[in-house]
Image (cartoon, rainbow, N blue to C red; front, side, top):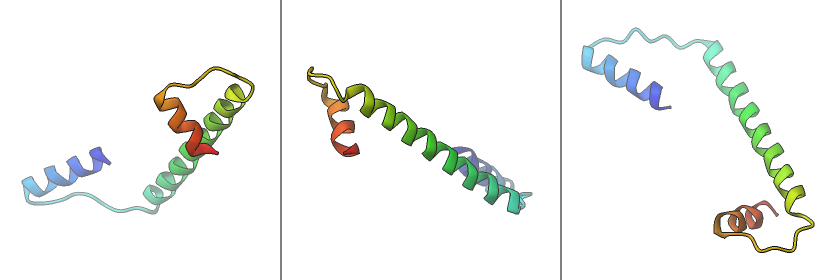
Length: 70
């Protein structure tokens, strides 16, 4: 997102834009989002399995993650 915005800013400063929208951009952005979501879900499941049998207390951030994932 930051790269896209900086490219837009540079194009506006130069007075012209050489940017072209392509269907490949949409496809790759969609696949990247799905891939990232899948990795996040796998990490969350691994975290929940790791925490499941433990008696120890979690710290602030881990407590937040655990409560939001249930």
